[in-house]
Length: 192
Image 1: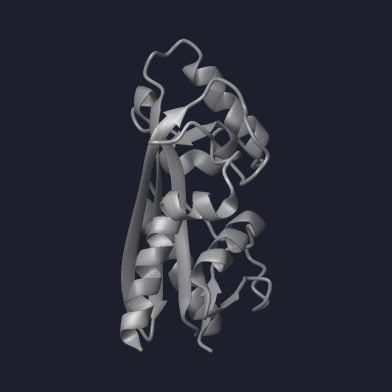
Image 2: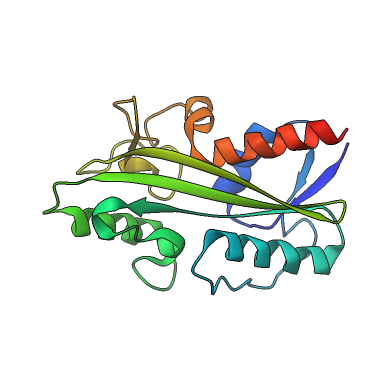
């Protein structure tokens, strides 16, 4: 079985990706003994994902996937975008980030948003990118306890439930990360 290091210790992200990948042994940063914090200083998802992937690849020499993702609110000109994890400041706090989005949109008519995920895969020495986008809207209050991050306030197009209310397999088939990971898996299958 092929091994792939996921450049993350985010348990929600690891669980979500493991459910989608199947057939590949997914290792976390903890599994390979990587304990350093990886800076994400860039203003694009692509640069942040590449930085994470290259940093981990240099550490372990294995195939690595890294993603950078975020939620982009049209009424806020795409914010928080690459700053989604720290929208309410440091330290990272999903509840404060989510509340800040609700506060920022309180008086806005346009509640449209999209999630974007960008995966950088270093596979057998090559660098490959896979993008996933999921459009939807932001509801006015939290709904559901599933998922993580902004999931309890994001309703994907064509649905009336938030990601936090949807079953994981439905969410994974619709989500930005699910779409990007599916593209990556198709690429990996074509390599065999």
